[in-house]
Image 1 (spheres, rainbow, N blue to C red):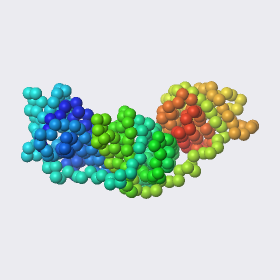
Image 2: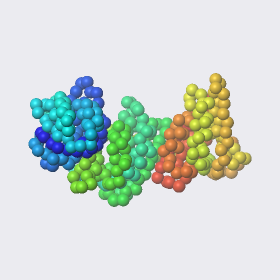
Image 3: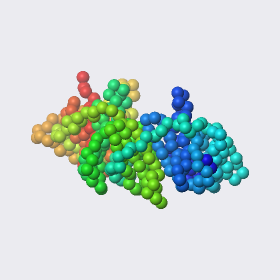
Image 4: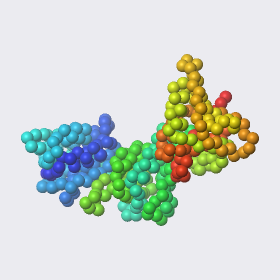
Amino acid sequence: MKIIILKENLNNGLNIIGRIAGKNLTLPILNNILIETEKSFINLSSTDLELGIKYWLLAKIEKEGKITVPSKILTSFVGLLPNKKLTLEAKNQTLFIDCDDQNTQIKGLDAQDYPIIPTISDNDFISLDAASFCEGLSQVVDFAAINQARPELSGVYLSFQKDRVQLTTTDSVRLAEKTIFLKEKTEKAIAFILPQKTAREIINIFAEQNGRLKLYSSPNQVLFEYPMQETDHPQVQVVSRLIEGEYPEYQGIIPKKYEAQIILTKNDFLNQIKTASIFSGKNNEIKIKINPKKEGIEILSQNPELGENKSFLPAKIIYRQENNQEVAVNFNYRFLIDGLSNIKSPKVVFELNGEDGPAVLKPAEDPTYIYVVMPIKTT
């Protein structure tokens, strides 16, 4: 193999595919990336056997071939080179890199031993706007459970139906759901559980892209593909195993009614929760109190060793019934902060259902996002 390529282009590709090549003691070749020629392209690949990434680059191919080399070494070295043309040549499981007066050799492994990254043969795909899809994923991805006993909760549930996709995560204490409307409708009514790690990589790779993502699926795998700007050829493919199992019927968890609805300025609410958190106890507990006689809410926290904090925040409060009594509900402040941080609008709606019922946070003017959180039960 012998190729000539711009350093900047190679560096961009290495930074993307090198993310999943790590320290694998049982299978050292997984610490490497695969470099191979394909007509007028070079293809960079990495995999951890659960997730695989392929990245294509235009290059001048003088001799075809392939080799695997340690990801960390190659990425670190190329990142330090000047922005000039590089010559890469593979001989006897060694990669030779020439750049001006620098001549470097990196020991590799036989490319024949590198695991094959699977592809999906189905030609039907769902078209997604890369930026909005990644933004939606980022609003839910952090709330998947780290639960070996219930692996189906450890990923993001994607449900596609005609003109929309719903993204859902839950850890049994809180739940987030984001609805994204599709510009190009699909006839494929499919649903699957995407591993959390894969979801994070999709956000990292595609969030800044302005184009369309193609999603291909099979019963146990999913593939996301983004094209090159100059040609229809793929630039990036991310292929991942899916999590097996049935996602729980979560719709019944989302409250359809409320006892009290509070409309607040998001940043003020968030800042006062952060202030109250300084004086919270071991359970990260703060108290939200509403009083029908006051046009706002009280936020209270107390720690026997540190002190206590009490603040008042003006708000519009709507009660479902007349003659309401004062309501006080305890929450883990971290869960409230997480929910508020993923809401983009300046105004939020906070719905309470008593001391033990699920509460809801959502944007005041955006019906596509909802965050459900359980209170801390009082003894």
